[in-house]
Each structure stands twice: as structure tokens, then as C-alpha cells.
Length: 436
Image (tube, rainbow, N blue to C red; front, top):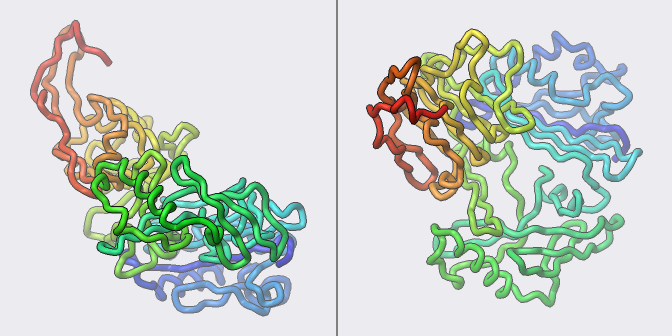
């Protein structure tokens, strides 16, 4: 591995996770036609070859056949924006792409990994790790151990537990080390579950509990934290086994699988269990309800739109709020002319949503479905203001209109439905008591 090299992974899929070779071919031809560097890099030939639904690195151009391309000295971009342009130009359905950048000549901590997903002309999900160390395997990032010798997706390694009766798998714990070790050395690490710590050993091609650690104690600690969750309050310790260390699935696994696979569930110290969602299928029938992905957010987590965003796209659409959207409020997705979400058909929230302010869905008279990717228990932790899904009240000098709600009657969670309280629908609000 050398300094200033990029390692790309580029794959095209249909909306239901099948390999899309046709879209890949159209995008490849578009790049050939529009990018000079794509045709030939410094006289060495094209840096990418077409292989099924993927762009693969041309070994004749890569660094000693390792798959790395010179993104520092040559014309090959050090980003994936060029891919997004091709994706949009050929109207592909789904693109999953990643770029690992190695600038190791500056510091062993100068590695960056980016992974993104594009759907129907929009980027709506991404994963980024910036400034990690690959001098050991697995890699080291601010004290955390992340995978690179495992799945090469640079996500944190967690302890894996499996219920032998149901085959359910849950990841838990925080695997850390004080500092990275030299190449080939064994690093002493710590697995912390709840407030209990266990010694671990991190080697070039494996992560294991230290030999004197009792696995039964690890399982006992895991189950004691798991029982804090209402959903798992009755689990039996004897049903669970420790299965080593794993990371959450990459976007390539989640968005590029048919039948679809679910991400692993993850247990947090407070007993909450997150994850386990299957990526929803993207309907490619252009006559059906269109899907609009909203994932750009400001520093507070509210939706943020580019100047050229077409708010008319929201009309009659199914809106998916991505992982970056943590908060919603009145008027946060309407333009200066007032074009807004008033006739959207459905919305989907990620588990990262923390707050929905009053008036967020004011006059959404066509909103028939609300989906939340987390559990009912997790939904209860979202701060939802009283008037988030309704409108009506005092206007002018004491004139009042009855309170009206959106058509949807419940929030559809991964494990059930939470009803929307419409007990005061049709009521009038006294002007003297009305509060904005």
C-alpha cells in the first residue's frame, strides 16, 4: 500500500436488490464519453473496467495490482461525485459506491472511508470514517477497533450473541484499545458491556477474548443488559451463545441483496435494541407513487435544501427522511412561495429522529401512512409536540376553526403500531387560551 491512493467499489442494483448490469453499462459508457481521465489515465489505459453490474479497477493501472489508484498525483478524482453525475445522467435506479483513501505518507491516521447510496436521482444515505489507522488489522479509530481485515467496511467491531432457539443475532459492547500496535503485534484490548469489562486480544486476522475470560460471564452480562428492554425482559440466559466479533452490515449487503437481508440488531447500555431493519424496496414503476429521499441536514439536524431543489417533487410523493434528519419543524420543507409537503402520500423516519415540532405536518391532508424504522419503545422516546400532526385553532380576532388531523391513524414501527391521539379532533380552541 502506498501513499495517496484510492480504493473504489462501485455497484449498480435494481430497486429490489438485483444486480443491474444494464444500468452499469449505460453509466460506464457515459463516463467514457464525458470524462477524459476515465478513457485513459496518464497513457496507462482506462482505470476502470466493466464487470457485470460493477466498475472494477484495471490492474494494469492500479498500484502493483492491489486495486489502488493514484488519486493524489493523477487526474482520477478523490471523491465519488463523478459517479453520482453518471448515475443521474443514465437514470439508474440504485448505486452503492465506496472509496477508501490512503494518505499514509502524512500519518498512519490519515485514512478515510466513505460509503454512499443513491436512489432514483438522490443520495439518501452515507457512512464516513475519517482519520483512522490501518497499521494494524483490524484498524484503529480513536481508540475503537473497526474492521478492515474482516469485511473491509470500516465499521466498529462488536461482540456477537446468538439465540440458539430463534437464531436471532444481536451485537453489543464497545471494543477498544489504548493505542494501535505495530504490524504483526498482538494488541491488548477491552470489551465493555454495560459497566463490566473483559480483556480481549487483537491480532492481524482475528479478535478474541483473552484466554482466561469466562465466556459464560460475558453472556451473563450481555443478558443482564438485554433484559432492561421490555421486548427482552423474559429472555433466558441459557438460550444465548457468544459468537465472536462482528460489525454491522455494509450498504453493499443491505441494498444489494435479494432476498433482502436485515442489518444486525445492536444492544446499547441502557437496554435499548436498535436495528434489524430490512431496506424497503424501491418501486421502479414510473406510474406509481414517486419516492423523494431527504437526507441533507444542517448542524442541528433539520432538513436543509440546495438552492435548486424542486419542491414540486414533494407533491404526491412518498418522502423518506434519511439518517441525517434528526429534527422536523413547521415550514422546514417548503420554499419561499409556500410550496410544501401538503399533499405527500407517506413518510418514513429513520431511528435517528429525535424531535417533531408542532405544525411539522400542517395541512397534510393526503398523508395516509407514517413509518418509523425503530421499535414502538424507541418511538416513545421521540419528542413529538402536541400539534405535530394536526392544525386548527384561533385565527384573527377570536375566529376559530376546528382542529383537524392527518388521515393516518398510527405510526407503523418495526414491531407494531402506535396510535395517533386524535381525541380532540373537531374541537375549537378558545382564543384567550390559544398558544403558538
